[in-house]
Image (cartoon, rainbow, N blue to C red; front, side, top):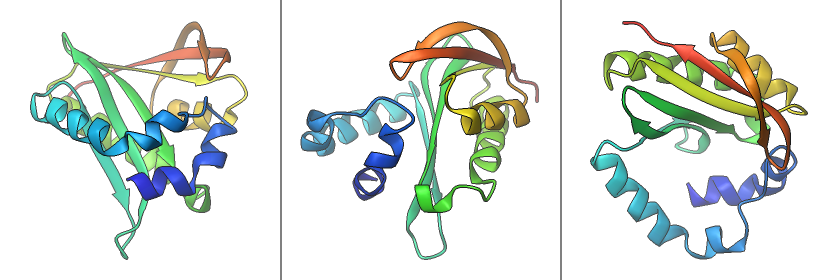
Length: 147
């Protein structure tokens, strides 16, 4: 996971706020804490992995509470344009409904990130309001889930 974040850091920073040096310096500790939170059901991590074992993306559900969660995702620069984000988001929506018994997902994107907006639209998310994402104006999206 750390290699994935480091290899794509500049690419991600072009679309969302950079994670900062502390994120990378304290990665092992933070990652262990997040895995403990996952074990407690507070969040759900999902990796997209190529056949050679290389991580090419992640789709996460965080702030899981009261039947809802916040969806976030990242795809490696070299893997964009193949439909991986849409496929990963759709699969996590399915898991959210069936495995995690969630009723609603929220997501957000910066207005300059047209690719992310397209992924959310293809996955059935509906824009519901304006917000700030990545330091700039953005949109908040919601998707209702059913089994």
